[in-house]
Image 1 (cartoon, rainbow, N blue to C red):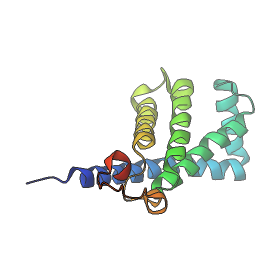
Image 2 (image 1 turned 180 degrees about the vertical axis):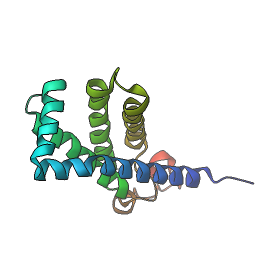
Image 3 (image 1 turned 90 degrees about the vertical axis):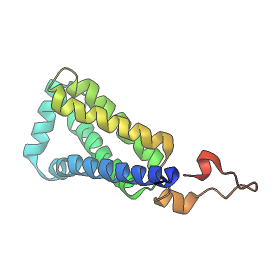
Length: 154
């Protein structure tokens, strides 16, 4: 049995995008809605981001972090503006790892944030793959020699 490596790679990138996008949206959505609609949620983030993590403007910073998860997750999921969205996710997850998870509950939360950072880094380096809106809208033209290379196999 022969495996079509470019097709297999693009399917793997698609699965990675769907998983990471879904997880980011799931992780951030309720917090974004809660920050906008619930004083109790704002109090929670003020205590966590302000008193425990010592961020300035703690509720605003929490909204930025959780909003980055939702917005970055949405764009990664649909494969549009994937590289900038992946950078947003990687940055947010790196900050989460270093500020909230380092030395705290590493097996659960820290393992997730490091994994999400690595998945986002892969998407930043490789792009969204063939099965994406990025590829549909910005597919590079075929080279005259027909060679292609990595960029043509997006």
